Length: 213
Image 1 (cartoon, rainbow, N blue to C red):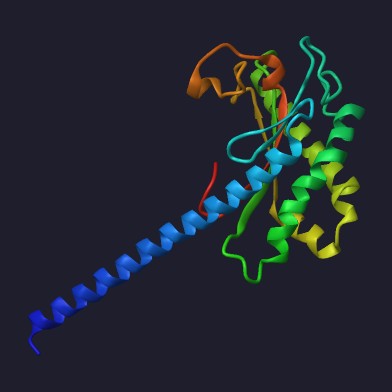
Image 2: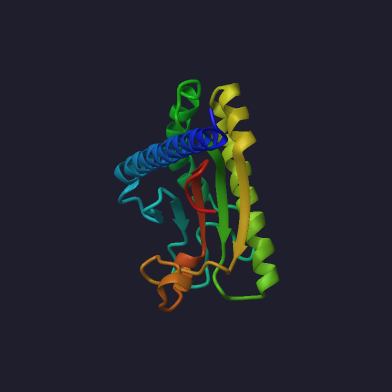
C-alpha cells in the first residue's frame, strides 16, 4: 500500500469522525433545547396569572416589584431583607421550580441533559450609585437563596438538597440589565426603563452546552 493510499484512508476516517461529531453535537443541542422548552412550558402553564411573576421565553422565572413608586415589594427599602410578600411568593412558586429540577435529578443516570447551574440573579433599577446597586443586588440574590435553602429546599430529600447546593450560583447584576415596559432588555431592544420591572429577582436553570451565560 502506497503512502498516498494511507493518506487517503486517514483522510476518509477523519472526515467520518468529523461528521459523527457534528451530528452528535447537533443532537445534543436539540435534546437540551427540547428539555428547556419543556420546562418553560410547564412553568408558563403553572405560573401564568400570578401577580408579580412572569416566565420568560427561556424559562426564567422573574419576580418583580409590583409597586409604581420607590417602595419595593420584594425587599425592604434600601435593604436585602426579604419582605413577607416575597417570602410568600417564594413559598408558593419555588416548589414548582424544584419539581422540574427533581425530574432531571431523578433521571440523571439515563438523562441526556445535564444541568450546568441553578442561577439566582439580583437586579436593581438605575437609581442610586452603580457600585452600591451592584453590591445590593448580590446581597439580595444571596438572601433569596438562603430563604429557598433553609425553608423550601430543606423539605426535600438530603441527596436532592446536596445536588442543588452543588449547582447553585448567586449573581448580582446591579443596574446593568435594565428592562423596558415590555420586560425586554433595554440594551437589546431600546425603550425607556421601567423601574418596577428592573427591580427584580430571576430564578433559572442552565443546561450544559445551551442557554444564557
